[in-house]
Structures are given as C-alpha cells and as structure tokens.
Length: 327
Image (cartoon, rainbow, N blue to C red; front, side, top):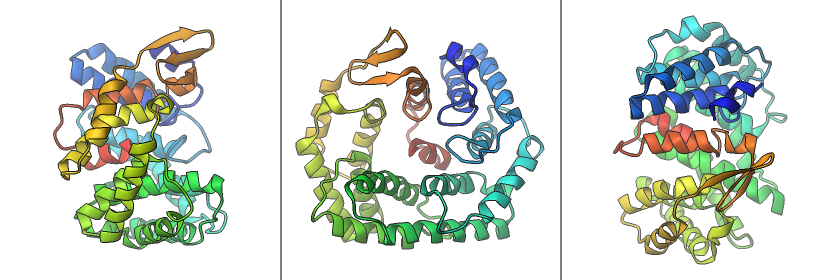
C-alpha cells in the first residue's frame, strides 16, 4: 500500500494519497508504530499542496480538507485548519454557491453535504446555511423527480443509503434536519417497491434504522421488507470487498435495534477472512476481483479495511467516522 501511494497522481480521499494518509495515522495509533505516522504526514502534506481544479469530496480538495480536519479533531496532528487550508475552504464555498440546480452532479452534492457537516466549525453560520439550503434543494428535487429506469434504480439506492446514513448520524442536531429529503426517499422507495427488487444491503439497513430511530413506521416497513428480500436472495460469492468489510458493522447496528439477524450472522461466519494475492496487474481476493487502484482505495480497498479494523474496539463512533464510513 505504501509503495502504491507514492506512485499515485491523485491526492483525493477515495482514490488518492489523503485516504491512505488517514488510514496510516489510525494504524500508527492502533499499533503504536510511529513510523506509519511519519509516512501518513508526508502523504498528507503532499495532498494539501496538490494543485487541482477538482473540489469534490470524493476525489478533490473538499475530501483532503476533511481528512486534515479529522486528524486535527482527533489530535493526530497539532495544526490550525484555517492556516493549512483556509484559502482552499473559501474557494470550495464559492464553488458550491455557484452550483446550478439543474446541472449539478448528485454524487458531488452528496459529497459536499458531508464536507459541510465535517467542517462546520470552520465556516460562518451564514455560509453554512446558504450552502445547506442549496444542497438540500438540489437533492430533494432529484429524489422527487427521480427517473424510473433500471440503471437509475441502482444509483437511487446508493445515494439514498448515504442520505439515510446522514440522517442516522446527525440525530439530535436539529439544524441538520434532512426530513424533507428523507421523506422524499421513503415515498419514492414505497413506489419502487412494487416493481423493483432492492439488492443494496446498506440502503435497507439505513432505512430500517432511520425508521426505528425516528419512529417512522413506513420506513421500518419498507426497510424490513427489503432486508428480508436481500437476506433470502443474497449470494455471498457476489459480495464485493466494501460489502464484506461492512458486514460486521451492519450486524452490530441491527443487533442494537433488537433485529433478528441470525441469517445474516450465519452468512458472515461462512465468509471467513478474505485473503489477497498478486496476479499480474490485478489483485484477486477470495471473493472478488479488483484492479490495484481499487484495492488500494479508501472507498473500497485495503486502506478502508485497515481504518475500520483500527476502530473496531470503539464502542460508539463519533459523527465524522460515521460520515466517512458511508462513502
């Protein structure tokens, strides 16, 4: 992973140097190995200095700034985010404010919402409110006007899972009220359940948990139904690495809401430990085939796996960790 990180041209969170840096800092603390922290700091410095016009959370400057803020909040580094990235934060704020509703990229907007939540203390309340209202308006329009096609169904479940995860993570933070968007998701989910079989486990789990947290009966019903269908039809050999990593966390979440998870638990036990071996330009696992750049990504590869493993003993994850896990 370290060797691969030095060959990367991208410094973003999901597929670049900053995601690996985040993983290394957590690993250094978990294993009490300072050398990993030195490697992580070097990658973080390169990421902050990276010149790019990509402001996105997933691949650009917004994600890098969130990594820096995460490391400062968790006392991995002693720094002032405004001194490190103040100019870039202002550029991103200006960029988001100029988004046009009809042309905005939905994936980017969801990422910008995560960025907004994670750096809230670094921006003015007026900037926060302006950006929040714009993003909520864009996302609500998307889910209300969602196009009914097989291709878009998959995106709907991916995007909905993240928004529902936001809703579950920000419990008690009234100013982050996502009720309007989530109600649109639930209504659309109810319409789609008649002619579309959901196969996204994270979506089903987040919908069910949202229903339980906020006593939303329709969300509980749709979430339970989706969970039953997925559990009955899931083929463990088709699970990707991201799903394998999330399985134990999903079991923990559902068990805390007294949900019967025997079938999922039994499947988790049969999965065993994934193993990796090199094969030419690609890396294979016991369950899935991935290209090297995917396997070394924070989105669904080794860095995310190590990050999750280092946090396994933490009983209750803080807000930022919950947000990062959603992507």
